[in-house]
Image (cartoon, rainbow, N blue to C red; front, side, top):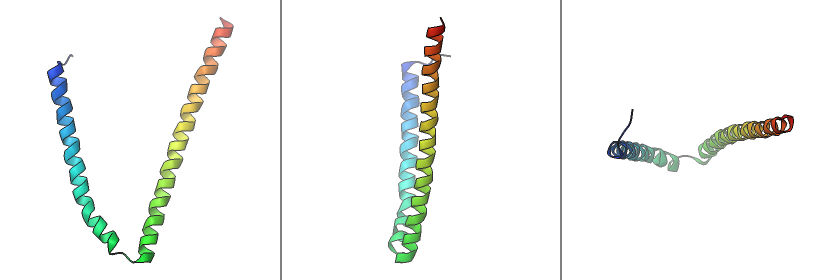
Length: 88
């Protein structure tokens, strides 16, 4: 199945439009959350910040694990290539 440049361009333009609409909708929905944060007490704000920090730490740990796995795969591929070249 082949697509012409015009079809591909139209698909890309449509995808960009959908992304921009979602982005604007998310920004519009976030505005009330900002107002709620401004009205928070200091202890509630500290709890919110600590919760977000823990979530960010989990995300960073996941990214680290993925990078370590990727490095392991690359190192394994290099070792495999070396063994194959030495054995050949």
